[in-house]
Image: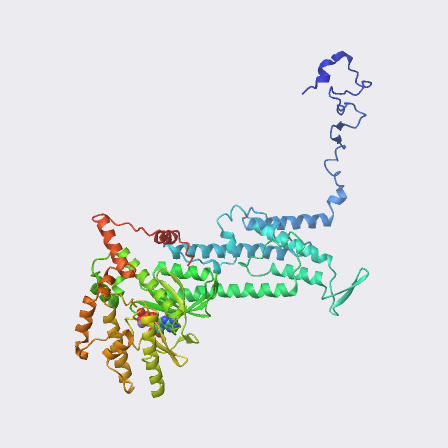
Length: 571
Ligand code: ADP
Ligand code: MN
């Protein structure tokens, strides 16, 4: 484009050799005068004369030399090897052949790379085949040589390996500047003596070493600055990285085994995995008990926001199908005519409520100082509590424990004392008390299985209490404990309610008492009772949704289902 200066100058006045340099109207740097003798200048500086485009042609003698022939042969061989691999990619970027390294090594590296890639591709195919359309997918990542190749955008970022190399290169470059310490442990470097204990040098070495930790351990990008790690930090990092890795594998294997053995449903598996992932649990170990209503696992406690969990934990998983709920069904039918009247979603709610109920009941016992598992966490139908026992073995039930006569007497006294404490101190009747739900540990009785415990205001609480008393007296009688009262006398001792009449009239008397007492009638309407509350809720729901397909209104439930669909379980 012509400048304004050029436009005002008549063409005839232009004299190539003597013309003064043209100055633009704005007084800036002059236009580059065009002439054969002048070095061209631009407003940004002088333009250097162009370098010769190519080297002068070689002489015939040079062209015939052996060196050149060898050189050409070598290049051709290399090109041939690459073409054999049928690979357009240029490997030289990430596998840098050192000059002194033989071509064979380079080729071996390329082949190894190809082999690893193919191997991982095969694992990938098997992973896809294995998972099919399953909602919960099993990851084969740990079997891959380099899982990151198959990340979602690994194809777009093939230079990831480059970056890694660059980081390591920078470590190497810095290390190269450091003197190499001979076997004697010291060297004179410049004007000072350097020993193998030099902080900066060993720090750099440690920093470079962490780059060699197994894949999956995030070390961050230490290549961008002169990172130095003290031996202490390095060792700690290594230890935690290794234990992390071990934990991951161990947890994975054990959980897989335990949960698949018990055929736990995917929802339960996901919840347990979450607890392990959040490190609330360190590990899930074997099954301690598998009953009709619940499965109990031993677990190693981890950490929560408000502090560490007990070292040994029991994880009680309530079964989520009502058919497994045989014994408890009786309570429900008797009390609230639940039978055949609750939909699946309601039955799941009921089971969760049951787990929650056990959690709250255990809390009451614990607060009152009654030996019982310490409730730690409740997550839907999964209850985590402290483990009663040692070496992953639960303490024996009273039924199985071998107690001396003296110990049996102590145990009986303790059971009675606890029943009184439970009734008056915790406002609870166990309702399933027997030699099966009392563990013998550290010379005393521990009370477990509090799911069905009810408040004394429950319409049948006294009936349950009498049954508990009957079980206890029967057991200690069978063990030969002397001077035991009748169940009705024990009932009176525990509740403070005296019922005049013979033992065989106990049932009738209790029934009458329950029916006629104002207290119990109030209890019938007491919404604080959780089952009564649920019953009301279910009835209201049924009235509302009559004839309509019921939608699950539980947000958390939906959330869990969504996660399962997405397969975020990563099982
Ligand atoms: P179920 O409803 O199946 O009877 P329980 O709560 O009684 O459930 O637990 C079943 C078994 O699991 C118990 O008999 C006991 O052996 C074991 N168990 C339960 N909780 C614990 C715990 N906190 N510590 C140790 N063992 C436990
Ligand atoms: Mn039990």
